Length: 161
Image (cartoon, rainbow, N blue to C red; front, side, top):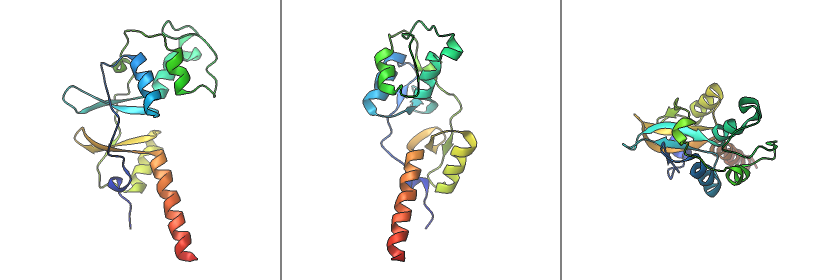
């Protein structure tokens, strides 16, 4: 049996809008316990993706010379998490539309798990949006793929025993 995106995808996708403030976005990620979300336009179609990484880029000492007016300057080491980011964020009138990635990686529900994995590897992304012509029906994350591999191996081990 070949696993398809429809078998792997989460169909209750947390989304944001392009006009959400960066402060609200940081808090949203923390509240939802996720690291990124599709950005929907006013018509409900996907227009981009915004992530924790996009926010971190905004506070990066390398890119901002260690001084960004919207965040406290501090040590953004590997232990720095999304909850720290939400806490450190001072707020601004900047919007998700200013940091989101416009190039959306999307697959149809019939795409195989292997195709989804290949897309992630080729594009260097951790989530593939599932849908058609910008209409979102689900999302497959790298974690979803790992869970499927684990389940497959457990099932295979039971059959072999």
